[in-house]
Image (cartoon, rainbow, N blue to C red; front, top):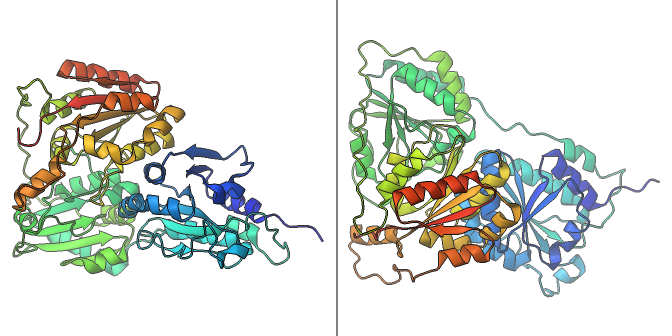
Length: 537
């Protein structure tokens, strides 16, 4: 009888079949059997700490729109990665996260490096957590993890694999490894006809409609269709309060900017509109708590999301659970053009000239105005400078799909590794990461990968030596004299250069613009350090 493939050979075929030949990892002894003599068509991207590994894979998976493999080291490695998995889950990144496990004969003994509760450790940051019952199940479990990670809502799935499983030989007469590798699950769901009728009737009858276009529209390929729908309706368009991707061009004349982040201010912003359609975003991500009415009186809210739980927990509005891009396209086929008596959406007020700091440092207004003037063709923005986000949104237009990434988890540590991952996913597009000095420290090991891979990423560090966004919240929440909000002086240039990344400090608009041009021209990564005023200045 012919001998079947090993578990490792069959598992690699599953990964090949789904285009998952780039592995982001930080290996340990329990992962060596999987990685031994890795075939030439696979690429291993080394990260020097697990949070950096998951963050890079998060950016890479979002930029490609495909499932991505992460390889971690048993319990300690998974523990290090949990914060980054919180980000990946919030961002909807389709990751398959594998971790090694002690050999099966010693798992019951809880020998060193046994993960006794392997499937429990990463919960609830993952959609599903699995450990195969027997070696022969590994290929099928990996295939299941891939399909779950790419079902709505997208997100990470975890698989713990005992290290002696990889060399087990499959019985070709009973194990359908080849069938598993070639199996496809088509995940995208079109809207229910009755639900679509409700949306069409409401939009056609609206006196003053508004759209709230979320990042899932961009992720699903509906960026340009959202523009066509807004123009067909003559609707005002908002971004959601907090969103990871930009789903609508922010320089479009119908764009009104992002909604506020709190309950009462959202209702106030929506006061002029009688029908509000939220598509591809939650209703809504609120913070801080500012109580009040959820909607103005007389305003009707409708919601389109592929996430059934997101639809269920919304505090108001009728929902259609379906792929947001497919729903936008279906609406384009059905809704009428703007009636003559429907008022055009209001125009946004123009921006004043940027105000200089006056203390020899660049203000954020000067910086983002200059960055917009130097913005490269096809550029991609990764932002993790929370206290400067409003200025960035106002002064740096995002006009193309797949061009902006921000974490929706509320935590830090996404920006730098995600920028590296986005750049690895498509080296033809220059990536610009705008990071706070606090954000940079969470996964700074990503600089080593950026240097080793020579990725086209320009890292702009806004250094105000504080957690400025927390000082803003402390003031708002009336919690004075909070410790730990000021940062020590850090030599960012020495850190970057120690990891092999060229770096420079700039102090004027002209110096900044020249540094951005050098960074975009490459080759490889470059860090630009920009001292900026503290929040109180």
